Image 1 (tube, rainbow, N blue to C red):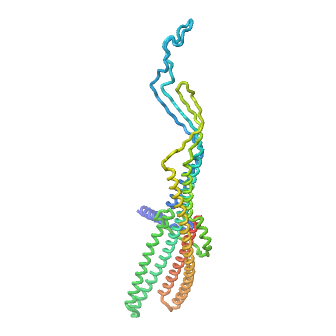
Image 2 (spheres, rainbow, N blue to C red):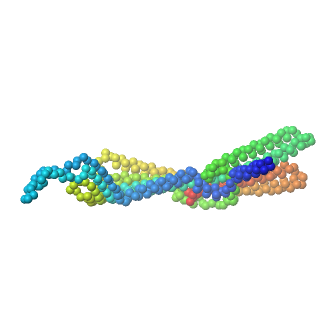
Image 3 (cartoon, one colour):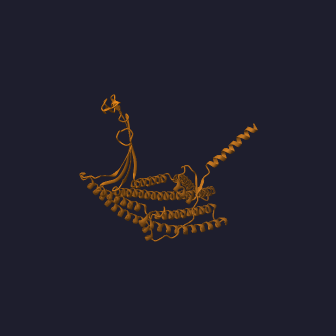
Length: 446
């Protein structure tokens, strides 16, 4: 009985240890979260596959420059097996032999089955102009997909940064809420004691209890927000959504930034929207050139080897070589209208590039102003935190000297924690604003 009880206790302990290991939160830093998202985010991986697809399509288009070697094979069956009938004596008379042939003779003309094989090597010549423009279109499509990849990488980084900041702030908010609950409990106890001794009214007691309920409600909201943001962060990192995470506050960083002209110049060169619009202009330009190349005749060189197995009076292998071409004489305006269509696409792409450049410049200027405001807010939050720290020190000293109740010291601690929360919000807001400016300038994923 004792052995069985010991075994059950041991199993319970082992199960508890295993469960504790399973639910142990995973501690991640901001750099680790960003790196994990770049390697494991499902949406980002899908976009990278589209880039690979475009690169392969570009190689396929480039392969059209090279000659093509192909073979055609045919097998034909027939019931014709008579051949050529030579009547008796048709070849004359020979002394001592007689007529040739002596009897009617059937000379077979091949077998009943025929096997044909033609192997051809063909090299395009004038098609080079069309192939060149096709390769240009494929390369532009690859550039467009790479611009989309950069945009997605930047969006994922911004999303992870915001989710990380949200989890970090929610964690601090939860800490502040717990301090407020503790302060409210001390205030309620003090007011209840005072009411019992006649030093306070029941209204003050009810007010303290109401504040305690408010503090508990704030704590519940903070817990819910922390759980939701943790789920979003794990999902952005490519982890299961229910993975428990613990985040660490990154080092404080509110360094000065470059001038506006530097960001604008970078944006006009590296912003994904600009790169995509510029690649679309290149694509439509090659489309116009391809439409013009359709007026050029198609001429190519070829060499063929023909093999046959049964045809009489023909060699087994025959070699052919020469040139082959074709030209469209009349197409009822198809090429002319196609060229006009491509020119319209080019004009639209050029206007869109101008529009995108203007929009990107405006986005950079707005992000720059936002970063400047975030820097000033971080300075203000830092000064407020210093004042709260000093107020907590003074309130703690007064409580120790008996000049204040414990609830006052607890409230000063909660105020200091809330100032730290505001400071954290300001610092992470500065980081997010800086990242958004880098994103607008096209420098975040570089």
